[in-house]
Image 1 (tube, rainbow, N blue to C red):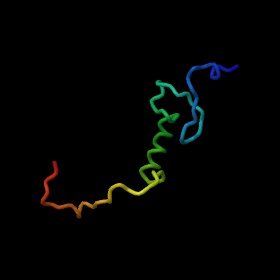
Image 2: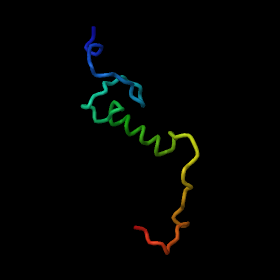
Image 3: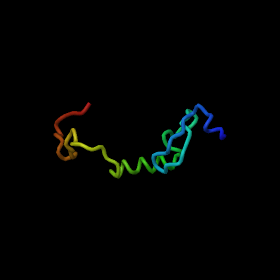
Image 4: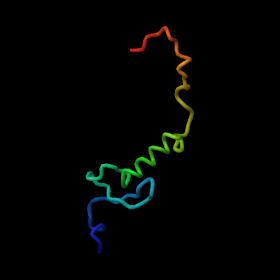
Length: 73
């Protein structure tokens, strides 16, 4: 038997590359296996490759649409 099957640490698939990894507090990139996979996922969210379905809660406001007389705090 392998040590992994006897371990109390669960094994999960990395969301990006699907490589099995141990879910451990020693992995600073959880739920990802490495920094590369973490950054790939971040890039997908930033480029809107990943989206949460549904209607937006707020309309997008362009900076030109803001009232310049109002002071922001």
